[in-house]
Image (cartoon, rainbow, N blue to C red):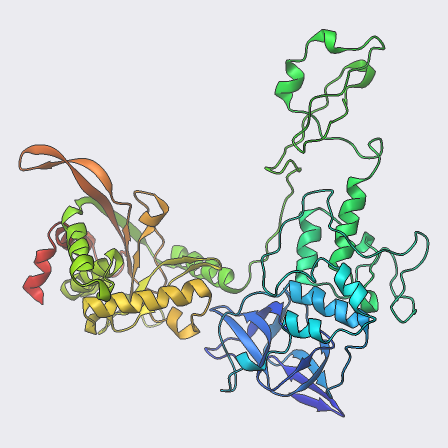
Length: 530
């Protein structure tokens, strides 16, 4: 934290776990907002988790030093706060706040100085609406954001459609502030600040932000500016915008008599957007080549996605695994009818335990690793040693909105099946909400991957470096199975084991997989080693 006169600059703090940088995901405050001590001001994404960062002092937000999507290193300026002042009398600032609020996301996890910030939030939509001045009320009521609750889902706008909006400036005149001062913006140049929501809407509709005239404070492009540009594009004359070519099937089957007496083709049937498309053939009757169309009837565009945060760490680990580990995969089909019967019996007799299929598979893996400790290991390349761990930290793959993560159940070998089920449920909930702490994503010694939830039968997954093995489970479906000399329908699944050939050979890997398969087919085998 740096203090200059009445201004205080808060820098990106050390987020622990050796992390040196973080990406700005979304700002929870905007310039002009009043913040209090320990109020959450920004959500960042590190290489291991999403983190909410609170500000350690109170005042008015004077500057945000980075936009969403910017990667900052620890110690770089994050936000600047000055003495608390009431800026609600400026309608432009009020509209800018509403614009930024529309782009904020849901709360993920806390990271602060120990005080609760939930009761200190002052940016709620209802409280801001109560503070509006008479001068700001007309502009706010004209905005489509005024009627939307905070954190509500934003409906997608159809091409060429825009909601009712406040009257805009007359063409040829520079837009004015509420105070009558002209905005400082040079056409053709990108704006200095624009909210993530505005950028997303513009990108989805193929608009260049540099060509949009801003009406917000300090030359900021607001959401209504983008919506107006979308509406203007939809109202453009037909002769100035090339109409999309009709489907080839339509033009190929059109009879020759469709040409009028003047030799020009009549209007083609309705296009994918529901509007009559002008024939591009003209007097010559030539059919233009059809452009590739997306599901919404728009031309497909290439997209570049920065490899940052969790996605970059996953990519680095998988690439390192492939380059360092000489892996091999073995698999077997098993009859899981007995395992499903045990799960159903536990759910019926002891529903409060919440023991599901994943918990039973975790119990079987732990038992298998006790018998085959070669697979509960890693390779120390620096010292050219195989390290067999004296504990089982069981990782399990979980698909989330942020990508694939592998939470770790620590000391799984000391837990009962019910305790494993409770811990799996707890970590899964944190993973889906984005609230996993960095410590919950490290230290695994073996991974269980239930890719059957995606409806696939088998896979050759990549080992989660630096571990030495990974067990995969496919979907469980009815298949013909020979039982007692007769072919009967059974619940069958495929188990696959990918292992590091440096730590064990096929004998140990096959022995572990066969033991797991036997326990799946006959769970009573586990009782022999309790």
